[in-house]
Image (tube, rainbow, N blue to C red; front, top):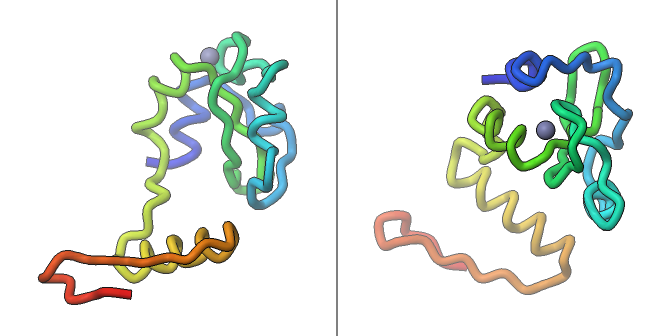
Length: 115
Ligand SMILES: [Zn+2]
């Protein structure tokens, strides 16, 4: 599945999506779907979910969706979960470092890892 599948399902042209930074920062999502939410790119209702997609030839764009459009397309999105345990642990470490919290990772006995 790909971002193209999501856009095709919603009948969205990427040129019409708002340009976005490469990564979500701080309160970006809250500003887009908070008190005065943006319109869903699929149907125009108030957006309840937002995210940043990387569209070939268009770059990073905001994808604001209402609940129904999100649920209709969430299975089409490429997985954001790294495919390996090491990738998942790297993501967790990066998130902990960004949040400045101590991280303790325990993996089941077959994973043989404890930090
Ligand atoms: Zn919608």
